[in-house]
Structure formats: structure tokens, C-alpha cells
Length: 83
Image 1: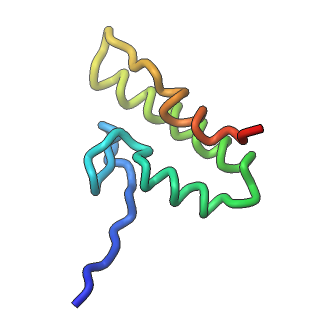
Image 2: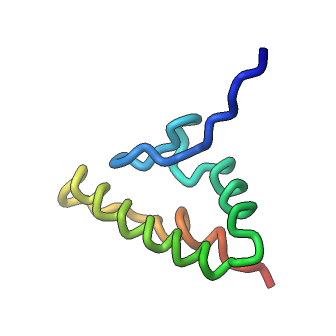
């Protein structure tokens, strides 16, 4: 009997992966997103930028006075086209 593969989705509002517990998007989530948005990098970057804003709001609420840092690298920079 095989186990169903669970998607590596964010656990809001803490923005950790609900499967592996790493900061989301974790490595598996990044791979899945690259496959899902293959051929449309612009749409992927727009989607990730929107999620970054949502995460910023959530994480700021959870830790007032200590704004989250590094979210652009975590959410967007990795998905930019290599050239």
C-alpha cells in the first residue's frame, strides 16, 4: 500500500510548510511551483509577490515591533530567471 503524496503547502499564519516544517516555500514547494508555472515565469513571480505580501502581514501581526526580514529572497528571488 503506497502513501499519498501530500503537497508542500504553507501553514498560515506562520508560513511554515505543513509537510516538512521548513520555511515556506520549502525546496519541494519551489520545485512544484516551477513545474506548475513552467513556461510562465512572469505569472509565478506575480503569484509569489502576492504571497510575500500576505506573509509579511501575517508575520508582522505575530511579532509586532519585529518586522520579518529576508522575505523577498525567500519568496521571490529564487524564482527569477537565470541568465
